[in-house]
Image 1: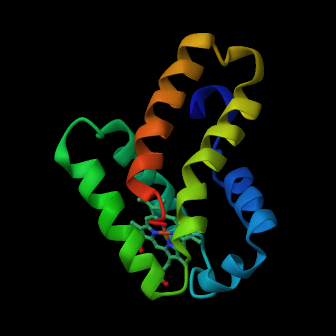
Image 2: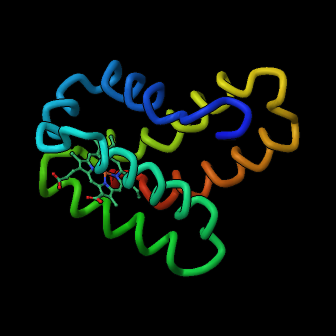
Image 3: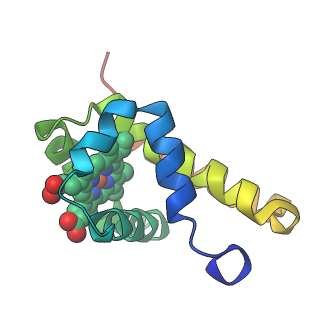
Length: 118
Ligand code: HEM
C-alpha cells in the first residue's frame, strides 16, 4: 500500500472528519499527528489479527474507551469502512478482486464486533 500510494493517513483522516466534523476537535492535543498515525497503525494490526484474540478484544475494548472520551459507537464502527474506501481509491487499478474480497470479509467481522445493540 505505502510503496504504491504513499501514506494513506491524511486522506483517511480527511474523510473521517468530513463525515464526523465533531471528531476533529478530539485530536486537539495531537499537534504532530503521532496519535492519528498510531491509531491507524493499530487499526491495521487489529484487522490483520482478527483470527487471534488480540484484534477482536482490542477493538471491543477501544470501542468502550473511545465512547468514554466522546466517540459514539456508531462513529467508531465507521472507521474501518472509511479506511477500506480510501485505500481502494488510492490503489485504483492495483485494487484487485482478491483484495476487495479479503477486505469485505474482514469488514463483516469487524461490523459484528462494533455493532450497536438495538
Ligand atoms: C470515528 C472513529 C474514531 C475516532 C473519532 C477516534 C478518536 C481518537 C482520539 C481523539 C484519540 C486520542 C485520544 C487522546 O487524546 O489520547 C484516539 C486514540 C486512539 N485510538 Fe481512536 N478513534 C476512532 C476509531 C478508532 C479505532 C477503530 C481504533 C482501533 C481499534 C482506534 C484506536 C486508537 C488507539 C490505539 C489510540 C491511542 C493512540 C496513541 O495515543 O498512541 N481508534 N482515537
